[in-house]
Each structure stands twice: as structure tokens, then as C-alpha cells.
Length: 443
Image 1 (cartoon, rainbow, N blue to C red):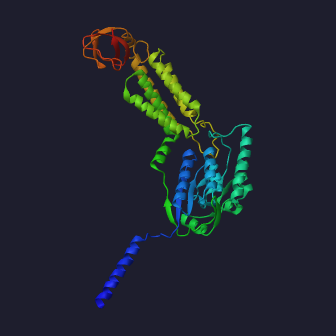
Image 2 (image 1 turned 120 degrees about the horizontal axis):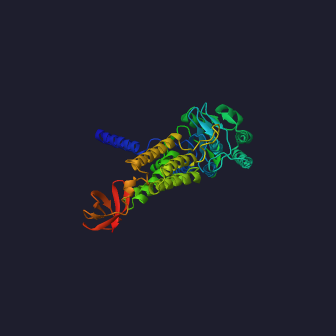
Image 3 (image 1 turned 135 degrees about the vertical axis):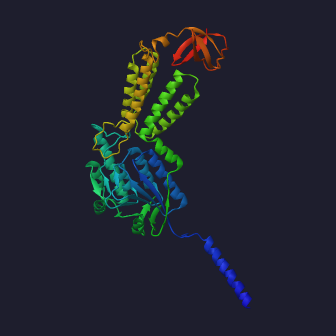
């Protein structure tokens, strides 16, 4: 009898242990999905928030929390974000954090459109100025029209979410900014919370209306799940940095220029195509100015002219100048007023100076090489090298397509056109001189 009791006890203990192991901790606890948005609002931001809301809906989470610290950004992506927030079937809380954070301009619309608007102590929001999709402050008579549109837009959002429409409208019309406690007192936000757990505790039991209908939030003791950026979003984040786009554009132009000067080389052409593709991808996700692109392309054309036309270095100097101008105007707000609250998308002047300095150094080097030994510069050649063009010689080795030739009493490295083979001992004529390399053809 005692053995039977022990056996039953062991079996019961084993079943209890198995149940504890197989039952996930917090299985009945709600889940809160957290997204961190830190920096200017752009298309990549809108795409990331849309992905987060889709994930939240698919995983049936209790609430989405957007932790926001942004000086503002582009208005078209902001409209997409607002639309997604208003259409979300999952409650969304916009949390301006950490302490001292800022939800300026476009960020104000995002906070207003969320089901719950929360700010950390010492955070602030507001100071909305009319921006064009290109990111520049709207000039002249258009400013009034844009301001009226934005006033109506933020008032409509406030009415849907039950916020103080007049106070939010003042952020557009008078560029008013509010501290956290002031915004709470005016009914612009719902509450002030020092950290995420405190916010979740305060929101627990609150009611809101989503696209799916009324919801009561159960957020106390919720499991916090962070949704970070994907590898692709990390890559796009780098590619949409203005400095990276500028460097890629310059690299693409110079690499393709090398391919034009030395046809048949694979690496420069491949590098140029890849760099150009990545630059265009980043450019289309930023408030770019085509004038800047034209300046950079024109700079490359002037560098090409320096290699082919006698110009005493004037073409190269012009190329350096237009390269710098391209960096200044590429994103169109280099000369924007410094007191605007919106983020600047301009290329860092230090990066422009570095790229301009590199181009200047290369130009000076080629000019000095061209004039070494006297004579005027003919492209990047001395007058003596230019005199080689048209001279005949004999191949010292097979050209497949490169090899060695003798012109006069000097041996040279030479190359023929891609795919052309010239046997040893054949007569050749010099078509062009590239430093110590001759471009030749059959005589």
C-alpha cells in the first residue's frame, strides 16, 4: 500500500513539473510592442511604423508604444503615419521620451494622432512651421495656404482624438511649443510619465476607440517587446544620410569618368553603377534638389574636359567649384534660416570640404604632372607626351589587349581596345597617352 502511494505521488509530481515547464511564463500577460523613433521623420520612418502596426495586428498585441524623439521632418511621410495611426485596430501610445526629448513640427502631428499621448518630464512639443515636401520653408504667398491646410489638418486630428484643438492649432499658426505639464494641463496630451513602466501603469484600464471599435487597455505588468529595425532598414538608414548620398554621387561620377577615359576596365564601371544606384535610392527618400545633382554631373564633365582639352587647369578648377556647389545645393537647405525648428537635411559642410579638398588635390597633382618638364598642359599630358600621339612603333610582345611596345628609342606599356589582339612585331600607332600607358592601334 505504501509503495502504491509513493508511486502515485511521483507520477503527480512529474505531471505538475511537466505542466510548469510547458506553460510559458506570463502566458496570460498582455504584450506591448515598442518602436523607437529617434531623428527626422522621413519615408523610412513611415515604412517602419507601418510595419510595426502590421506586426502588432498580426500578433494580437495589447498596445503599440512609439517612443518618439524627433525635431520634425517631411510632411508627406507624416501624413502617411497619421493615416496609419487613425486607421489602426490596435491602440497606439505616442511617448515623447526621454526627459528633455522633443516632438517638434511633424512629431506634433504624430503625438496628436495617437490614441494616447504621453510625454516624459522636461520634454516638449509643438513649434510647427509649414514645410514643403522638399523640406524647405514655404516661401511667399504659398505659406498662408499651407498654414491653413495644416491648421485644418491638426484640428481634425484633435477632434477625432478628443484633444484641445485650439492649443494644437496654435502650434501651427503661432509656432507655439508646450512643456510636458503645460501640454497635459491644456489637454494636448493625456499624461506625463517618467518611464515606460510608469506609463503602462497609468494607461491600464483606460478606454479608447480604434478602427475596430472601443477598447479598454490592459497594460499593467505587460510583457514589453521591442521591435527594432531590420537589416534592410539599418542599411536604408545609412543610405538616406545626406552625407552618404553626396559621397555616393561623387564616387559614381568619378568612377564612370574613369571608365570613359580608360574603356574596358571592369571595376570602375561596376563601382560607378552600384554607387549611382545606391545614391538614387537614398536621394529619392530625402528632400533632394536636382540642381545639386546637375552641379555634380557638370563637375564630372569639367574633369573630363580637363583630360581632353588644353585648358591650363581651368576645367579642373571649375570641376572642383561645381562639386562643392553640388554638395551645397544637393538637399536645398544650406542657406535656410538657422532658427527654424525643423531638422536640416543638408550635407555636412565638413564632408563637402573633404570631398572638395580631395578633388582639388587630384586636380593640382595632375596639373603639376602635366607641366613637369616644361611646356603647356595638354589635358593631363606634357607637350612631349602629347607629341607621341600619331607616332608609330612596333610591339615588343603580344597585346591581349595589353603588352609592351617601342616608340622611337623608348619602351612603353601599351593597351589596345578591349577584344583586340595585336601580335608581337606588328606596327602600331599611338592614339592617346595616359601617363605611362599608351593607347595604340594597328598602323
